[in-house]
Image (tube, rainbow, N blue to C red; front, side):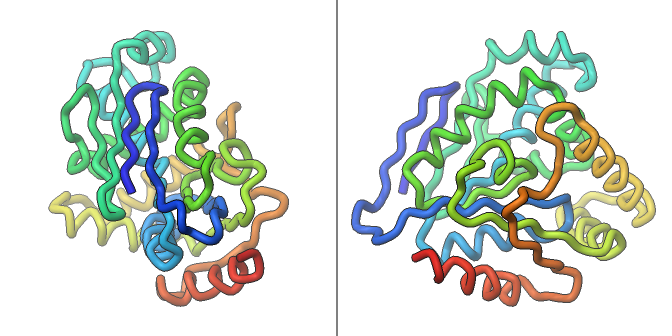
Amino acid sequence: MTAIIRGHDVGCVADEQQASRLIVAIDGPAGVGKSTVAQLLASRLGYLYLDTGALYRAMAWAVIESGRDPADVEAVAALLPTLSLQMQFHHGAATVLVNGKDVSGDLRTPAVSAAASVVSAIPAVRAWLLPIQRKIGQGGAVVAEGRDMGTRVFPSADVKFYLEADPTVRAQRRHRELVAAGHSGAFEETKADMAGRDTRDRSRSVAPLVPAKDARFIDTSTLSVAEVVDQMMVVIAARL
């Protein structure tokens, strides 16, 4: 499967032999395991995995690279027309390019994470990325994860999940990711950063982080990735 995003122009080639082409939406805060779960679920289903957080992180990277303040709404909005954003999918793995530069390896740094939370609250940014996300999912056969998949991007998704977990567990997971990626920092700092992001995500005026009314809740605090996916597959199997 190959999909390339440049601005709002999207091309997608999918396996026409797939018997079912559901849209599966997964929402929840950072550290609940959305990305890992979504990737495994997409692999089991033979679907495209859409990491919408990577799109917002790419936007944040571009803002930082430009020297702009992520909180400067007008400055960030003025940057949008100058950007070319691409997401390329090859055998389930995504590569993100900003103006032709592969930034995939730079999207999980603490600085980009913090900026992404701020940038994602800017209405102009969300409006710019919304049609891109919907274009990717319009043919179905996609597992999309983020913070407003079931509420705004794909409100008519066939299956919706909302993942949650104990805040300390979430912070521990995120801290391990950062350490594994070579980023130093105290655990308490990671926990405070996540708490701040939660507040911003849940209180923003446009598409705040809230569960869709028809979403299935799964607490991942004590579950393995495989166990979470198994629970999801039971729900999805009823729709296939």
